[in-house]
Structure formats: C-alpha cells, structure tokens
Length: 219
Image (cartoon, rainbow, N blue to C red; front, side, top):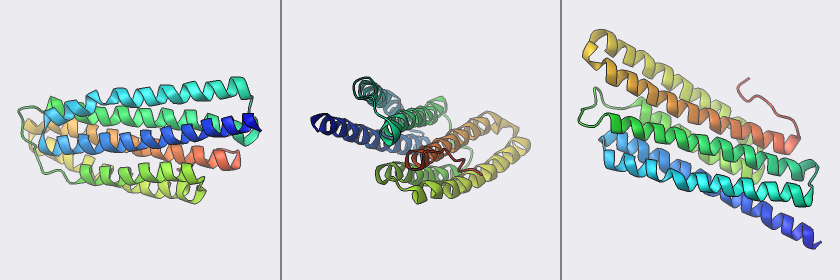
C-alpha cells in the first residue's frame, strides 16, 4: 500500500510538471509572436533565455519516470502513463524550441520594417495556443474526444499556413526586394505549423494511454 501511495505521488508530480511545461510553451509562443509583431528584439531575447526552465522540467520528468520504472516495475496502464509522460515532455520541449525559432527570426529582423501587417501568423498562433491547452487538458482528464478534436484544429492551421505561403510568394514575385524577409516569415509560419503537429502528437499519446493503441489523428 505504501509503495502504491508513493507511486501515485510520483505520477501526480509528472502530471504537474507536464502541465507546467504546457504553460511555459504557451508563454514562450505568446512572447515570440508579440516580439515579432512589434519587432521587439529585447522580448525575443527573453523568450530565448527562458528555454532553460523548460529543459530542466523535461529532465526532471525523465528522472522521475526512470526511477519509477526501475524501482516499481509498473505494468499495463501504469507503465503507459510513464511512457506517455516521456513522449509528451519530448513534444513539449520541441514545441518550446520552435517558439524560440520564432523569437530568433525576430532578432534577425532587427532594424527592418515588416513588409506587410501580420494576419495569418498571429491567427495560426492563436489556434495553436488553444491546441496546447487542449493537449494538456486531454492528458490530465484522459479525454480522447478532446484529443481527436485537435486534428480538426490542426487542419485550420494548415489552411492558414497554405494561404500565407501563397501570399508571401506573390510578394516575392512582384516585389523582389522583399524576398529575404518573406522567406523568413514563411519559416515562422512553418515553425508554428510544426507546433500544432506536436500538439496533435500529444493527442495521439493520450489515445494510446487510454486505449493501449496508437492512432493517427491526421487520417
């Protein structure tokens, strides 16, 4: 009984750390987008520097989960809970890296003006932020319906990304002097689109946790 209480306590710590990682990723993405919209390189640098906190949380999750596997030898769903915690923390860490890539793009634009008002990029980021919330909540509640909903949200992000690419390509054709910045903005859109993909990965991990089988939410 004592061992089970200790096991449950450690599992709860994993859940708490993953929730904190999700909040950190949302803050990083919001900061990176604000920095881009205002070409605020100081804010962009703050986003980059805060990444160490996210890495520390991922390391803690790996430490706790590895200890549980070695000392408790969990099976069935208990083992899946630990495996899923590893996978989700990896996805969240990568999402944080992509938010940093957005911030670094802003730093590369220092001294420039935006070639156009940003519309699709902030909208993509808004949807992706919702997806991060959905991803973490689906994990905490073991809610497969919410996990599957993320695939629909991801479709919206993909559509916005496609529209943005077409618009920026038109800029590059008609205004050759915008090519460098337009290419950088397409990369930013790609970074955000990839964050959405990682959120969808978390949804797949939740379905695996609940059912024991891993689906493809993009089918």
